Length: 113
Image (cartoon, rainbow, N blue to C red; front, side):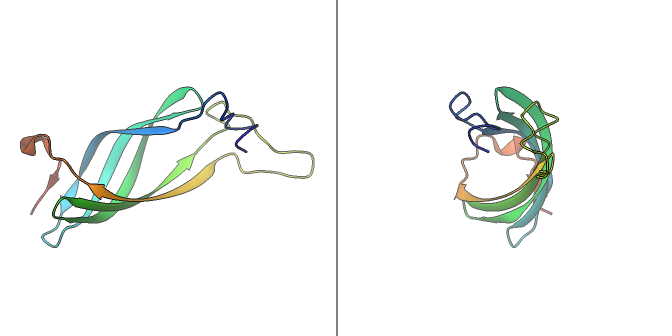
């Protein structure tokens, strides 16, 4: 997969850049939001949107989401062979945790009730 489909020697990075998030932050720090952004993969950029769930405690954010990547539709090689059929999209679950730096409080889309 890494060599023949993703061609990691030629395209060593996959980068997601968040552009916009809108959702609701509860008093207990739990949140659910729609996250929109650009996924740069295999030399191309693709607009994507996903639902994100998580928790904000102080300035530490924990979040999880699910993505479907239609890699064949996005121009990557289909690795299916005669008797071996592979799905045309990959399902990806992401979990992350890290510090949040607030740049401008008036622009934060997650709003407390």
